[in-house]
Every structure is written in structure tokens, then in C-alpha cells.
Length: 351
Ligand code: SF4
Image (tube, rainbow, N blue to C red; front, side, top):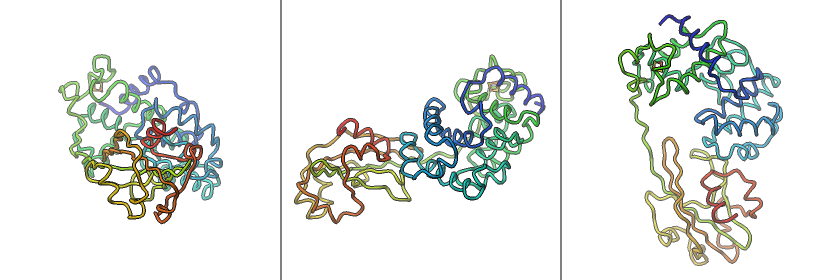
């Protein structure tokens, strides 16, 4: 299919079918960047309230840069992939310090910012500055592979390069922003993964997949994601009205968020076996008051099963030596940024 014809069809389709979303009414690179980071690995319906909260709480990049990381993580809570929130905050600081608060307008310069990869750089360059840099996301892979019969594996090292080259050949020079928005929207709504609406599709006559009945074979993606199963046993120490929490460190999920004292085991273990892993002083003082149901949390590469054991102590002397534990009232606990799994437990059992 000829490039100009394809781009025109996509833009025409988009003009008619586009959803009315707040970040489509602005050319402000700050708001566009916010929406793009929030929407990575997130559905629009889930991301929309977060976008509104962020814009309201931090109307400019200066406001976001001034906030503490804890405040940013707290506002992000529930959206998952928390490294995005940390990068968001670091990027805001970079824009303020290195670019006087104005996002750079070129793809190459945007790529230098924290948390901005090829997709986000192209999105900001085109949506905010009308540059002809093509976005390539999961929707674009699907549409291009199906329409043009591209069979390169999108999980391989050269696959993304092939698609990026094709996408940049196809992008409209006159309306790059609408073309980019359009092809992603087209992939999400018309050329969907399992049920593409080929019968009503404006490019079906020239679509490779439609003509060869290969819609469900494309795009090609061979690499399987290995999913690791993890069992988190949380010991929730309580002394009077105080609960003891820990800030999570680097090199694992949920860095910078708060949880409880954690014993990770390869499989589910009964409470008394877990207590055996605590120090003699804690073992002597600890009595499990309550154990929770199992809470499950699915991430891309891991499945986490968490169980909570509420342990009442008379005083904190037995846990005083334990690294990083910090006492919190219920009200303080409510304000801390937490993984959603911890939030669910607290709402069900403590708050
Ligand atoms: S004809 Fe079907 S597979 Fe091809 S682009 Fe349209 S919706 Fe997608």
C-alpha cells in the first residue's frame, strides 16, 4: 500500500473516530509528557484519573520538580511500574535544571531525558512540536505487520528497527501528530489483537493479513516472558497503636514504597515456620495474633503471593535491632506510598 494513501486513510479514520481525551487538547509538552508516561503499560480508563490528579497537583514542571519523591510515589500509588514515577520525578528535575523548565523540541534531545525512550520522544516531538517522528508501540506493530505483511519478530533485536524505519517512511509530513495519534487509536479500536474489525476497515482491500487470513498470526512475537513465582510473608509488628513499616530498597520491585518486615520464601510456609526465621529475642516476644488471606499481585515477570501475619508486641525492644523498621500511626500509614497489595491488606484488615 502506498505510504501517502495509508497515512491519509489513518488520519481520515482518526478524524472521525477519535476519543475525546484531555491531552489531545493541548500542545503543552509537560502535559503531553505526563500523559505519555502515565499511559505506558496502562489502559486509558485507568490512567485518566491519574493524569488529572497530576495536572491538578503539579500544574507545571517546576511544581513537580519541587515535590518530594515520596509525594510523587504517593500520588502514583495504584498505577504500578513505580520506576516510571521515579523517572518522572527525575526527568522533571532535569528539565528544570538543564533546560530552564522548557522541554527540548527535538527527538534526539528528548531522548537524553530520564525515562524517555524512543516511543515517548517521538510522541512528545510530534504531539507538542509537530515534528515528523513516528511513534512505534504495540498498536503500531500490530497495524503495520498486518497491513504490510511484516513478519520480523518484534521481540528480536532487529525487529523494532525494521518497524521504526517503516513507520518513519509512512508518517504524514503535514499532520504528523494526527497520524501518530491515529495509528495508535486505529490499532486500539479497529485493528485490535483478537477481534480486528476487518469488515468495516478502510484499508482492508490492501491489507496483507486480511487478504491472507493471517490477522491472528501477526505481529510475530516469539520470546516468551518467564514468570517467576514469589511468596511474600509479611510480619506486621504492632506495639500499642503503632505499626512498623520499611521503605523498600533498590534492585527489586516497588523501590521507595513502604511495606512491612518481609520474609520471602520459595513456597507458602506456615506461620510458625516463619517465626523460626526471626531472632531469638523476637521469637520469645512474638505471638501471631492474626494471619490474613493470600493476596495476589501479577506483574509482567513475576507473580507475587503475599500473606500477612499480625504480631503484637508489648514494646519495641525485641525489634529495635531490626534494620530499617519505622513506627507509624494508622494516620501516618495512610499517607505513605505503598504497593497496591499492601493498600488492599490495610483497607481490609487494619483501617
Ligand atoms: S483489515 Fe483487519 S487486519 Fe487489516 S488493518 Fe484492517 S482491521 Fe487490521
